[in-house]
Image 1: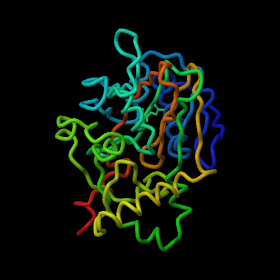
Image 2: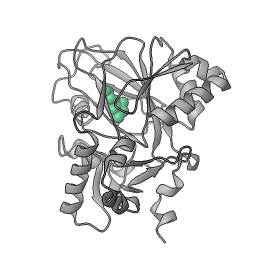
Image 3: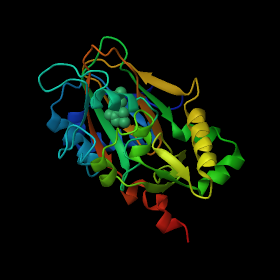
Image 4: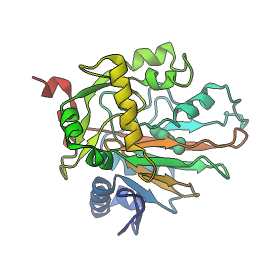
Length: 293
Ligand code: OGA
Ligand code: MN
């Protein structure tokens, strides 16, 4: 297995081991798991795999999130983002799925608004437009390391609130339905996630983050916006242009990502499996109840 660095201090391509190898062999899993802990974003090419292999691969890393609301694929381990209707036509620009795609173009980390949140996401892009529709990443580990010492000290023991409805509300006021709001109440996490394997810290915020404990609403939101800007500044992101057979896995503890726009009249479909974080992934230390005496 070979790991070839791709981005500015994070992201790498894995060669010589594919998703099916990881699903079947402990040694392949161990190698890819180590690369995941180190590089945060992994690209695999030439993976013309079935949904079963995507699930078996993902399952190696931990329990899978079952999509409950807010996604096509409800009740399954697949979270599907697409502008294609079941009859093959494309949704109009004001359709809920088109607005969801827009919300997905805000910098975010998957499922920080859930308890438990996500360890990782595995994304397959079976239908890609001829241009646009890329996926972009930024390392919150690198962002943490680039913060002034005083800011790191301030954030290390700070807690922030995350709400699915908050990020949706930036696109359209009622994009998160009543049912989705009820199923996804706000959650609070520490703003620094420490990786238990290598001890590296990362910032933990996203477009879903709407408040910081101990700060006024405006102060908190201003700081959150500044931190996201810092994390995603020019020269610190890595953009992936999809090719058939590509699979990308990212570490939701320490990277932000966003989809990029594409033409309304071109089909796009991506299928994600999401692995839930456990205490072995450093989750216990993220809980306010556990850490704030
Ligand atoms: C996701 C996601 C990005 C994209 O599936 O979680 O953010 O480019 N996808 O579709
Ligand atoms: Mn996402």
